Image (cartoon, rainbow, N blue to C red; front, side):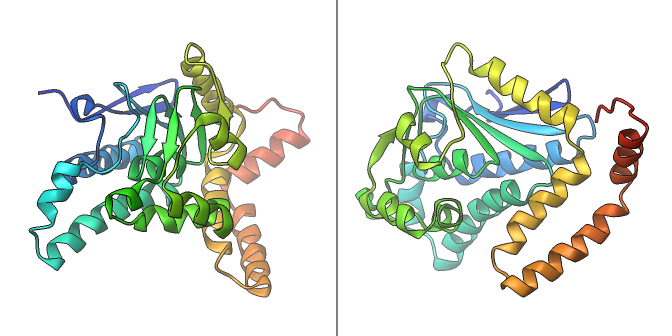
Length: 258
């Protein structure tokens, strides 16, 4: 049996590949667990600075495995809550990861799969990719993805996507700000690798981690709370080895590669 999730590192970029191709990479408890396990591996891998999430097969991720979802209807509330928390933990793990995560989307990314593709820090998609939060069309709710989508796009755009359940193309996703880059299928591997290498070479790991932490924290703070927090993070940043190294290199006109 093939591994559900593959992992390899090339030039400090860790590639996590969804490989449940016979189910269009649909999400089940086992599959989500495996993705979480490999993400932890990448986060703890000192040879990996940037993470790329991609998929084998015709779909990036078709959302929840409906056969599995049907089985869950026989479970207790506690069992269903445990399953939901499992997916919640995966989404949170990606969102708060100290490493930058890039999604490489080719094919459908629907429902929870759309959330998985677009929760990443950066996203590249091919013109044949499709997106949609389709849960309302099967009597379900886009519960966990909603928390992150509202943060990403704001309430008005999120309402439109979540309440209609419409499926839309990559051009519309780009227009909405759901994805960052629209790239031809023949070029996407190269473009993603090039972008990841830019982050590897020209950005400090400590700085990237702190910026991600702050982006997650400041949104729930008042103006004054946010400013005090920002001042405190400035103090913390100035003490890091990367900051000392970066300022020294700048003042001494030394070329710096992170």
